[in-house]
Length: 422
Image (tube, rainbow, N blue to C red; front, side):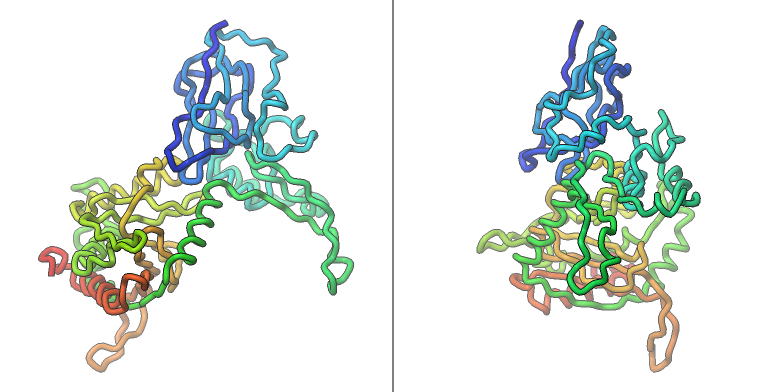
């Protein structure tokens, strides 16, 4: 019997360990070369682990939810394709899970593999793994399958009141009966609760946000921008742009260009703090905040000042697609000199974005809505977007922050400025 080991990929220097999500194959099942066997979640990205050779999955060394490090052996493949039927899926002693799972859970049948968006939706609604039949490729559960299941009537009030189940790949923790808090009626006791450990990515996001608020003197300045000129320009060239470049002309490319325009005028907005030094960056790596099923990620547009509108739109579309699939690389989210967060896609009217360390400023973009404004003493209706610039007051004074945001506003209200750099 020829055995090939399946190992954890080499993790970056900043990542000490990772967590296994859910095995896509069971012991005894055939696997093809380069077939994805499992996904590994780090505090930055989710990595896919392909089969190094074709054969049969002979042994799972580390089970779902296990903590692993670089180059650790997590499974073995028999390339001769012969496996004893009695081989266990994963020996209990070999499972390096962060917390022991209940015995009943270990004996439960394997659940159908859920796509990332579907898994998150199931977790949000307390659906047990395996409770939703999959219609996707290889029986995988899609987001549509979960939505259909949620639309179906509840089986019974008793079932609805049962404690929610823990998402796939997350170690279960005992849910003790909860006594009613002091001062509340006794009937409020013994209600179901769910305790789910943060994913590595969510824990890392929490850590960085706290770090940002604890180490930066964050202040936010606001302004409003009339988006009519951009909207008219976009409408005029949208069809020709898409035909020429194969991608739609969105608004984000205008915001990126306007931001770079302002950063060139006020380099301190593109700088960062290193101890007692201010580091002025001679390049413009713009982070684009992207929501994903596993949390917020900020991939980087490298040398954004050298990118065309088409280059920016293509890259942002690619970021969004791969973020949803959990396929962004660590190197794509490392670094960055300035960030843009677009809460407008979710309907946000106004917010105060938090700086992404070690950067010193971030632009918040919001929903464009028709609003009454005064022009030449007359009240008129214009498509208005509220911009918010959060900045580190340790190195950025109000003057630079306000004038920088005004420069972005002026560039958006007169896009020709972007062509002539004025």
